[in-house]
Image (cartoon, rainbow, N blue to C red; front, side, top):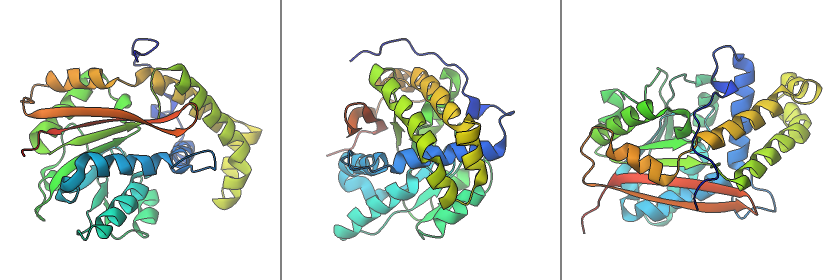
Length: 287
C-alpha cells in the first residue's frame, strides 16, 4: 500500500543537542518498553517478532554472523532479540552468536546493565559512526561475518547520510536489517497516540520500578515525556522510508550492489494498528 504522504525529514526533539540528557535517557527507556511490550492484546512483543524475522529470513545462515546494533540508544530490543535468536540456535544444536551494542553517543551505563544479564551481548564504549565503521568492529577474528541492525533508527538519517551508511555496509558487512515500529500510514498515527497515552498512565509504575522521581514529575506533573514520545513518533512516521525507497538508496549509494537483494515485510503485534515493518538487505545466497 502506498504511503499517505511523501517522506518529510523533519526534526525530532530527542535528536536535539539542547534536549536534556536525563530526559533523553527516559525517552529511550520508553522506546525500549515499546519494543518489549507484550500485553494480553498482543500476539508477541515487537522485539520477539523482529527476532523471528531474522530467524526466518536468515535461516541456515543465522549462526554465520555477529550482529552489530549501530544505533543502540538505551539498548532497545537487541538484548531481547539476542535471547530469542540464541535460544533458537541452541534448540537446533548450533553455537550461539554474539550481539554488539554501538552508538554515535554511547549509553554505556544502560548497556552495562543489560550486558550483565547476557554474556553474549557486549558493547562498544567509544563513539561509532555507522557511515564509517571502525575496522576492528567489522573485521571479525572469530570467523563470523558482520550483520548490521538498525532498530527504530534508519529513519533518523537524511538521504545523503543513509547512502553513506549503505555504502559502508556493502563494502564492509554482509547484510543489514532495518526494523521500524511506524510508517507513513493512519494506523501508525493511532499507534503513536496510544504510545503517548500509555506512557502517561504507566509513568507511576515505572517511576517506582526505576526509582526515578523524574519519570513521574516529567510524565504526570509536567508531561514532557509523553509529549516528546508522541511528537517524535509522528515525525518518525513521516521520516520512515518504504522498502522501495530504501532499495533506491541502496542501488544509488556508490557501491557495487549488483549481488545484493532486498526483502521486506510487515508483522502485526497489536491489532489493529501495531506493526513491525522490516527491510533486510544482503548478498544473494548461492544454492
